[in-house]
Structures are given as structure tokens and as C-alpha cells.
Length: 352
Ligand code: IPM
Ligand code: MG
Image 1 (cartoon, rainbow, N blue to C red):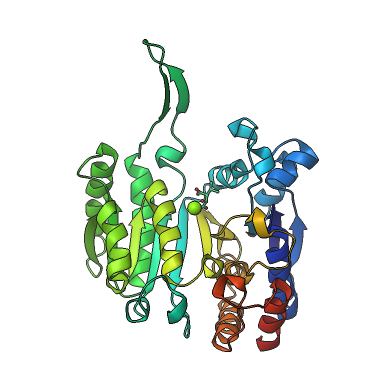
Image 2 (cartoon, rainbow, N blue to C red; image 1 turned 180 degrees about the horizontal axis):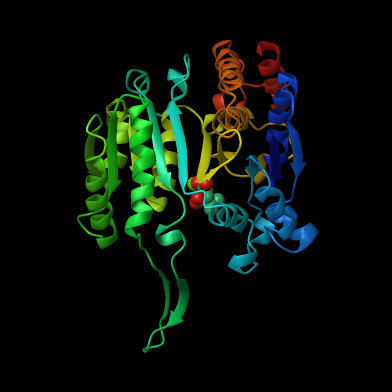
């Protein structure tokens, strides 16, 4: 079982280190790790945020554990050389089109949510975000208009097969949960969204057991803080999913708790090829200070074990250890506590 480890920039290496300690403690037989550079560090070492050597490691992996990328010192570079291109490139190159972002309130975390405890307590949802299309990957540029004004432009589009495959992922996920799927779009304004909605409705014919609803993204943003308990699975496009998933993270207390899986179509010997990353970024302001919460990365490792390596029992153990650590009151600065990155890692290991 090959795991590619791309720790990246900022707090990426620190949080990834803790996840690897957890992996080691599980003592699973037959795991091989391969390390690669991504992001700003890859640009400095190899001249590109996603070097060919890293892509090769990714291609032969069963699962990829990804830390974070992002580095202010790269802001002046042309877009193709910026750290974020590592994530976008891996998602595209490996056709990782389905981003699963669960948001569940851990016991005892009610007081840390940006929402009132009685509202926060209801949250148990999964955002299924499309990851290979939308305005993220359309043609883009800046141009001069005839009157001399500069104009930036980004083309938004979805082809029906792109919508169909993510819709299937979402319906199947809903079947494994409370059988409720809410498709989020902006069909009152965007043609892209109208097609999205039409295709999701077509696909729904194959899932009569799942209750499908539709919501405009502005309303969804509002409902997510008003009564998040109404959501089970939410399926949406790349841009809307990016925004709503950060919003969901504050509803459960900290972005330091949210893991994600980016799954493709390729089946490996043990499961589905995927990349796993905390949804937080590289947090350069606290990088190298042993302050970051590694839980989102540890939970991402659990998702890797479950989805890419078929090791559901090990995944359950890791998730339970994190939940127990939180319940025991061990918290980092993101949750008003004082535990350092390595202390949180120690605490999870002790409970494992
Ligand atoms: C995320 C991030 C990325 C995205 C950035 C870093 C390109 O915000 O994974 O949510 O927008 O998809
Ligand atoms: Mg984001």
C-alpha cells in the first residue's frame, strides 16, 4: 500500500508529521511512504510548485496525504508557478473530481461554534464539492477593452457528464447516510447552474430512495448558519463548494478540525485513489511555532485509510482517538486551549 506524502508549506509539515506518527503507531503491515515536494517549497527546490517528480510519486500511489500549500513570498510569481497550482494540478492530473468535506460537531464542541450551541449541536453534514470543473478550470485572462480599460475574466462552465458523475457520488453518499441530498446552485442567474440542476434531476431517477431538494447558493449560505441540522448531503460546484465548506468549518468550531477527501474514478487494489488534506491552508502566521492543530490532518489520514486502503477499522480507531482527545478537553489555540501541535499529537497517540 503506497501512500504519497506531500507536506507542502507553512504549517503543512508540522501537521503532517503528527499524522505520520499516528500512522506509525497503527503498525499496519505493508505500508510504504514516498515523500514529494509541493507548493512554494517545491518551487524553491525544483522550480515548479508541482514538479514532474512529485506527479510521478502521486501517480503510483494508492492514496496521497497532503499538508497545505501557500506562501506569500510566491505572490509575485505568475499564476502557473504559484503554490496553489500544486493542489489544482493534482486534482486535475489525477481526475480527483469528488471532494468530500464532512462537517460534524464533535461532542463538547458546542461552545466553540460560531453558532449558538443549540443550533450547532444539530450539525452533521457532508459537502460533496465538484473539483475538476467550473470557473476554476475555465479559460481565464486579463484583456484590454476597446476603450482601454483592463478587464479580468474567468469562464464558468459545466458539461453534463461532469455534473452527472458528481451527482452519482453525492446520491450514493446520501444512500449511506440519512438519504437526503440538497443540490446547491444559482440557477436563477447562471446557465451553468440551470444545466447543473437539470442533470441532477435526471440522475435522481436512479435514486428513488433519496429525497432531493435544490437551493440557491445565497440561501444555502444563510440556511447553513440558521438551521444547519436540515442538511445531510450537500452537492455543489467547485466555487460554491469552496466557500460553503469554509463556512461549515466555523459552524463546527474550528477549521482545524475539518478533513477532506478528493476522490477520483481510478480504483486501486484496495479502494479508490484519493488525495486527503485538511481544509485549512498553510497559515504562515503560525508556521514553525508548534501551534497548529493537527487534528484535521489526522482525520484526513483516517479518510485515506478508509477510502483508499480499505482499512475502515483503523480509520474508526483514529477518529475515535481524536474525538476522545477533544472530549477530554485537550485543545489547541484554535479552540481557546494551550496544547501545542506535538502535544495534541501525543494526546491522540495515547488514546489510540
Ligand atoms: C481549498 C482551497 C483551494 C481551493 C485553494 C488553495 C486553491 O481553498 O481546497 O478549499 O480553492 O480549492
Ligand atoms: Mg477553500
